[in-house]
Image 1 (cartoon, helix red, strand yellow):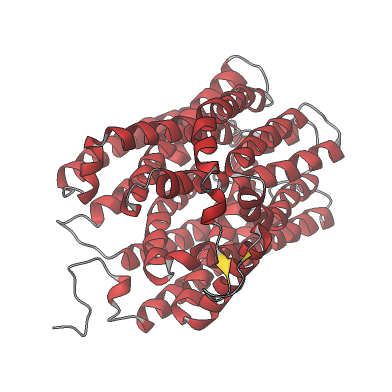
Image 2: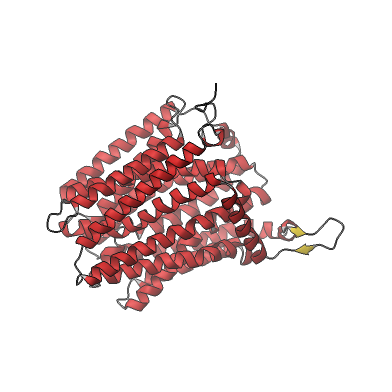
Length: 481
C-alpha cells in the first residue's frame, strides 16, 4: 500500500495536468476577462485571496490525521464516532449563529473570531482528555461554519457596497479561490505527511502547524482589512434596510430580524418550488454521505500501512480531476449539461460505495480496491459540486439563496450524525470490533442513500425536461425545436 499510494499520486497529478491543459485549450473567452485590466479590482482581489487562502490552508492541514490522532490517544472507534458527531452537531447549532454574526458583530471581527476559535481548536489536540477533545470538536464546528460564511460576507459587502464593482465580477474571485483550493488540499496532504511521518513528529504536528497560518490570517484581517472596514463603516447605517411605507416613521431592522426574515423567506422559496425541494434532497443525501466517508476512510486504510498524508493528497487530486473534467465536459466543444454530470456523479458515488461493501468484508479486506473506490468517490465529488452549484444558481433566487442553503444544511448534518451514531451503536454492541461488519453495513447504507439521491436527480430532470433554467445557455430541451 505504501508504494501504491505514491504511484497513485503521481498518476493523478499527471491526469490533472493533462485535463487542465485540455480544458484551457477548449475553454471559450470569459466575459469577465475585462476585470484583469482593472487595477483597483485586482488589488482588492489579491487582498482577499491571500488572506482567505491562508484560512483554507490551515483548514486542509487538519484533514489527513484527525482520526489517526484520536487512535494515537487510544480511543475506540465508538468514542471517535462520538467526537465526530459532536463536530457535526456543532455545525448544525452554529450554522444560524454563523450567518447572524457578521451582521451583528461585524464582518472583519467575525473573521478574527474564526482565527481565534480555530487556533484554540488546534491547541485542544495536545490534550488526551476526552472532554477537552469534545470542546475542540465543538470549536471546530463553529470555525467551519464561520469559514463558509464570514469571509464571503466580508468580500461581497466590500465588493458591492464599498468599491461598487459589478456583481458579475464576484464569481471571478471565488472561481480563483476554488482553483487554488484544490492545489492547497493536495499540498496540505504532502506537508502533513512530511511533518507527521518523515520527520516523525506524530499526528498532532499538522494541527500545530495550522496555528501559524491562522495567526498570519488574523494579522492580515486585523491590519490590511482594517482600512477597508473602517472606510465602509461610515456607510453602514444608511445601508441598513428600513421597514414601513415611505411617508411613515422608519424603523431600522436589527441583524437578528434580518437573519430571521432571510430564513423564513428561504423556507417559503423551498416549499414553493418542487425543483428546489428535489435539489435540496440530492444535496442532503450526497453530502451527508461524504461526512461519513470522511470518518471511515482512515480506519479502512490505516491498518494496511499507507502514508495517510499521501492518501489524502491522492483523494484531493482525484477531486481536482473531477472538477477539471466538469469544465472540460461543459466547454463549447462538448456542451454536456450540468444535470447529466450531476447524475453521473451520483452514479459514480453509488458504484464506489457498492464496491466498498465488498472490499471491507470482515476477515477479507481488499485495501487496494477500497482505495480505488475512495478515489472514484472523490472524482464524483469533483463533478458534483460545480454541477449542483450551477443548478442552485439557476433555481434559487440570489436574494433567497442564503436562507434556502441554511435549510439544506439541516437535514444534511442530521443524516450524517444519525449515520455515525448508528455506527457507534453497532461497534459498541460488538465489543468494539474495528472496521468490521459495522463499517461494511455503513457503506451499504451509504449506497442505499446514493440510490435515493439518484432517484431524486431523475425526478428533478423529468420535472424540468424542457426547463431552460436547468440547462446551459445556447442548448435546447427535448421538446424544443
